[in-house]
Length: 323
Image 1 (cartoon, rainbow, N blue to C red):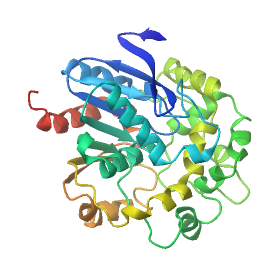
Image 2: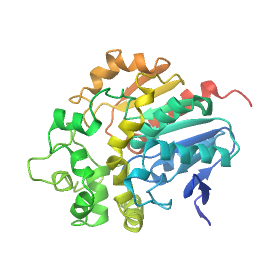
Image 3: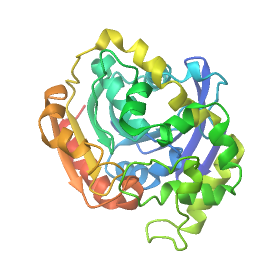
């Protein structure tokens, strides 16, 4: 199955027991672009073209559960090990020993762990919005969220099967996309008691210059086809990840890495992220890293597309010796 959107080609490949949809453009060293929640490959539309124009083979998969990729039913099929297995299969499909990896949000989480588990397959890494964070040795991740943020933290709402899906269904898909993609809250997403996160998020009455109605509709149409259960299953596998990650307790990411964060990202100022990144704790876990803080919110690869594309390119080009 193949369709073309502009010059971006799409196809489905078999990897790790699932069919995965990928969008690709260009030739040269492979760059994997890993989207977050709630996105699919289209979130990287600007970077795909920019990288392709500069001599790279840009490949943006729909991660499992998203878009036109398979969406297994069980949350236990959405651990970082499953997602990374899909990506190793993708590298093997292209017969590439190593790739540059760029991830945003959940895609960043996956990119960090891909680099931790298989540094032999990653040339260099660029993560947006989400730094690598250490595993708590003795408390499950969702328990630590509950202790820190209470029961009304958005992740806690996402954990309960069906709950967020029912809440989202009260809105049309364009509105759901607006509420998430145009998010301009800078504090953590904690709702008043008894309120669903989707009701708490505002619906912007005007669109910022970086996204069009047509682009929002592309996101809305895709989620109308695929639903939200696959994406939400990433959250529902959080504690399973915690259990499975025990062997890597205290491990460091040694791959060359660049972290790009928007200064108005959710929780950057009040969630401890800024202190963690600037205070040396992050550097101790990712010793070969640099950090760039830019003016922007959470979806900076869309909001500040040119700036982020240039930051990615300037970093990976250092490691792109003629092959």
